Length: 88
Image (cartoon, rainbow, N blue to C red; front, side, top):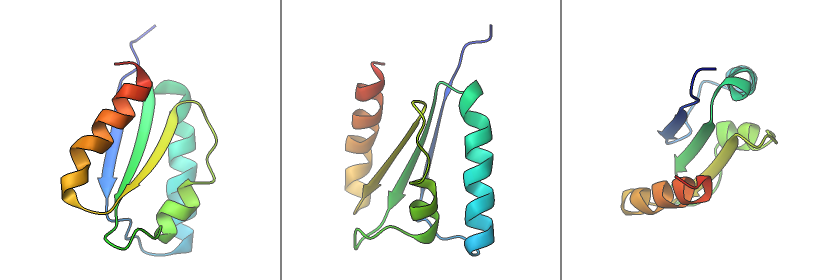
């Protein structure tokens, strides 16, 4: 079996709309059986989830993690949190 690698996406959460958000959720769910970890991290200054972040938060799978950070200075801490939880 091929080793499973992590996929980490940092984004501001902007997307084209609800249909695209659902499509993104479905695509992520399709990847989860073949990746070791899919991490979605939103950088949102006001801390509120975007439409994409809210849609992805519907995913419940052991290979999926989602975080929200409020500024770029928090990105390294988010990576540490993600991979520390992974045991890497």
